[in-house]
Image (cartoon, rainbow, N blue to C red):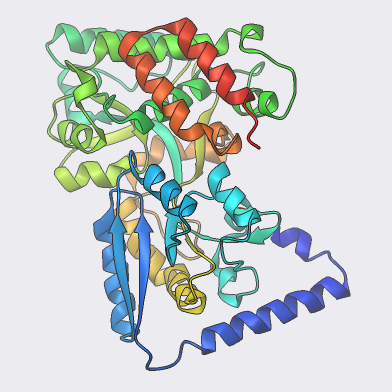
Length: 419
């Protein structure tokens, strides 16, 4: 981590200087007229904002063209894993720095170590450290996210509702909306990754001073000996998520994927939606005039914890022969004025110095992060092979409600050890 490096002795400082010199040499080597094409593999739906940044970069660097390979949250991981297995690296890849898959590839030497570049000083120290793997930086973080409930302020006002501060108040609000003929929640159960995300958000929402989902699940994975039978919190989280999906969602949520759920919420077809702060830009893309807000999903006595972390990052892959050109794009992305472009669209807090976030939509959420009530997305810190299986399990549970199969499957996945 950056702070630890400051305390290391002269030898480490000399080594860092050598790496920095090498990094600067790499930057200089791109100052040629050679025409280069880079592939950027993008797994999020906000392709328009990254394309805007790409266009600006290409205007400044006419000899470098970036081709955007766009996927979706539901299929991107599978495509990425297939290309890694067949040794088809991308020059640049959008990923998530906390996810086990990404961290494993960094340890395997498949991502370019950016630690020696001077421009990485523009990353806020806290998020620089959060982005590191074994004290080395392999990516540029783009935004900070949190798991939340998005709500339509106009629908709430029309039904004389206040933002719920407890679970009982949330259910009472949902009952009021349902009785008035309004769909309380939009669910995107056709997107298995979204199903998994919602379960993770709910595990944080049921936490209290006796149980922390990150400590519990990651502790299980690391050999604490804990079992699902040792606590009622996992079952409570699953029961509550299934209740909202089964009793308060639109008809046939299995036919709704992420993109459609954004459209439906934006069009006022539902009052609330469990999602992340990243969804604001996708909602407003469908309806720029929507009057919406976001609040933390409450538990019995208020909000104790919420899921949060670095959302996307961009990294450069090794073995392409174009690493120095890819690093040049990362430097461009890390500049305050270019990171501001992303934040203005994404609306989430930025990990880049000097970027301003003016977004009243998330005012009710920011305080919890500042108070330290945020915990990481715990699934990301478990085995690299669980992501797709866990998402399949969550989707099946929201379809059939088989609690025993879900909890038993979750425990098997958490305890699984990859070779």
